Image (cartoon, rainbow, N blue to C red; front, side, top):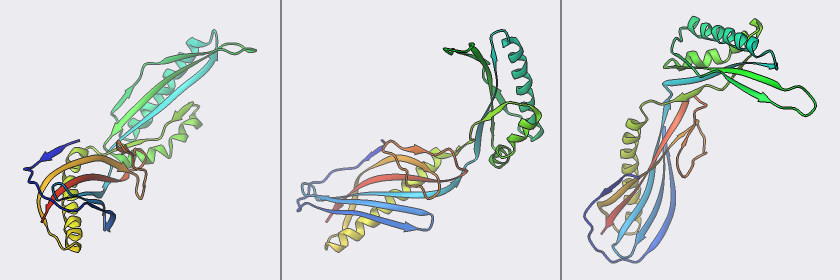
Length: 240
């Protein structure tokens, strides 16, 4: 957790907790936790800022496989290699040329009453900045089955490449939101907010639109192209 420290000045006041506030404005959502500590007369506020973003990087893995009995492994290797070639061409024809592939694996499956089988499989992974094209391809991958390709497609994963820069921008908004909330609360109690004593950033939540699935250690939804990035900040202000 990042921390920004400022000079500390002692104050005396009665302690009270004012609760949790929720602010929703446009594409920015904020919530605030207020408390005033009696030892140094400070107001602590936890605010947040949320922004709608669009993923700019897509990653997608496709697996091809063959399951055979003992003695058919060499043929399975050849069939898997041929299927992998078809999948790569499928991406190349769509203009997706950045491909990587894992080593081909063989899984041995034992059964009590039947023969031992072997599963030969290979994974082809593509990464692209054209997230819409990857999304479109994920809806037509079934066409390969009509060509005899035994393919198992995972869900594409969508990422935001500029998340560190976005986090910094949202952190500033979260602190500003916290100050505005602090001023409202202090005013209602006949006080005013002074200088910022300390501030610390919380975890980053990358959420699907309208999701409330926040995690204590942060979350990162990769299933949707449209996302909401939320950052929290806890700020402590002197109260006079």
